[in-house]
Length: 380
Ligand SMILES: Cc1ncc(COP(=O)(O)O)c(C=O)c1O
Image: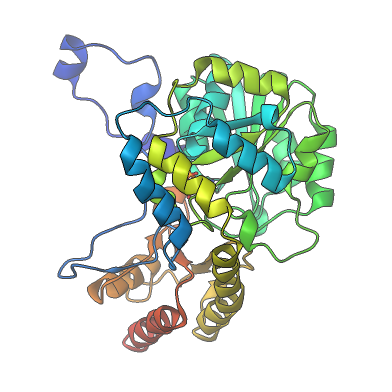
């Protein structure tokens, strides 16, 4: 696992000696690698590489965004108060227990900055979302990776990594990039077993796509807890990844601490307006959900039929593993898809060299993925 971190480009010696010196550890951080956005020879590739919303966004959100253009000369509301009130009422939460960020990524960064100092550690799953380890290491904390047998977060493995210097445990539920999820009973046991000084961050970026009634909704867990933050995003089901709006729900004391170091105007004017309008469009959200819930199992079983190994997913993507032999492996399959203008996410940077993550698309997109992979595997 440490090889992920060791792949950070090393700064050249003369530059390091002559120029300003970053804090210890900064140059050991491998930068975030996002899903590919370009395919040679295709002006508009089919992008199934970043779990964005294939339906776009709500027309109401788009109208909110456009109307916001009239106020671009003004600073945003620094507390996102309109959006705060709308989120609080929509999810039945206390407004003062909310924090808004430039994506939920910013909330993870704020958390680590507030709670970690050198010598501390944060714990995440072996295949956990990349942004957590960057946030932790940027705060000069050690990042510990708990083994994920069967590609799912394992409560006992997480607890084995926790010690007196653990400050945050990050859990994406459902998880990215594997799509697997944890039940209420599992997360409740994790929470019960954690010392109260440890923050449990329950990241629900894909919450809207979940069907399993036993799934743990972080918002419910956070309501009565002193050390839980539940995060959500407008990037996925609401289709607003380009605007960067995420939020967290935590006890007032945690929100207060994060607010002290938050950039004053971190969520911009059109982003607040569009997110607020998006919340109001239940029909769009329902279409997004319905598409994923219908197409996800179809895509997964078509991949299974091809002999690939998929894990059950509750997110808007499917995780599949390929054979390792040359001619049939994941990297070559990714290239074969890109040759046809279809972008998916190879998972080498997550330490899963044989893995591929495919965002659920429209029925015709998923059929195209399967056709290309069928031809690819047949040609070997
Ligand atoms: C598990 C998980 N959490 C958080 C995020 C980031 O969300 P945001 O766009 O709100 O920063 C992602 C994005 O891919 C994700 O997969």
